[in-house]
Length: 438
Ligand code: URA
Image 1 (cartoon, rainbow, N blue to C red):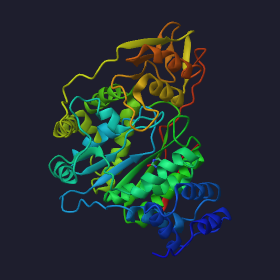
Image 2: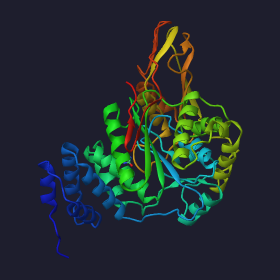
Image 3: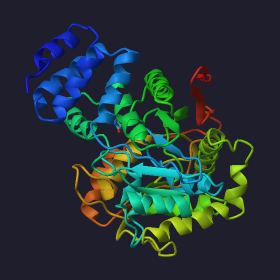
Image 4: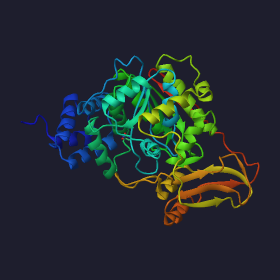
């Protein structure tokens, strides 16, 4: 078949900062998916996008072209509204685990297609796979049945969803082009729109442990994704949330499941509970249930009931104890004072080096590895008191994890003020914006 365009021409257009037409973008994505545009050409084009950007129409065209590269799911006919949530990823971010059953406990369907982790932020599937027997791979029919009967499903995204994104993401990962906002926004939203959810809440993080640490960039990403959602008819709201310090006290796989279960039982660390409730309130509002009180369903066991059914339906034993790491090392405070800083990125890297995360796709992860924090910023600490416990099955991983934590915890003299950083720092919805205060 004669090709309508030439890859080199389209790379040069972007290199010179000129917008591509809808037809050019459609061709590029389709030709790349068919192998007509080579990996090195697509990588060069991605770098041109990183340097010169794309306008709103181009980003929408790119998103639609990536959706068109694969299958499109639909959850019509379930008899329940569907709402999903996506987080740009953070250290200790286990919110999906309590959130999906919590929202489902109000009769809303939550189809969570999740991924495995790469790098210092963990993946939702890795966490759930710490539960003995639990399986991530469901057929579309199984997923639909679980949504109809239980309302919540967290499972692996099939290979058929936006395959162009999968290939492009793998190239970006190895060519220094991950951080391009048009590419991130179209990558995330193509999968969410193809998944067929009617509404979507985005948790876009900024701060040391986030994928985009600079708040202005996180805000721009949030706005771009909200616009893409609106253009595709998916009601979308984004919360901007602070990821300077880890969420909760547990960072790892099994330990994050345990902490999530504490939240589902009405307890758990206050920041994990606060963000779970804030995101649930947004999801319920988008599903037309804005007058419901999500906190009540954590406190009276309704969310826990859905969690237990959701885990059991996927082969997991909700009562099974989590695997315990064979080795542990306690890091203690060197002086009395107040904990003023706890660097999220450093804690994430330490957990990763202990075996909670993987360096390459397909590597195994340890269910019991991770970091258990013993204090939060603002807490008084005494010399010799534990600040964190490192967990791993392999003792030789501990020195490198300790290296990552060097300087991560700062203790200042008692009385030193610790800035009060709101966890939910802003909210962005189509046509209205409250980016919050700085
Ligand atoms: N997550 C995605 O799915 N895509 C990106 O580009 C970045 C994060």
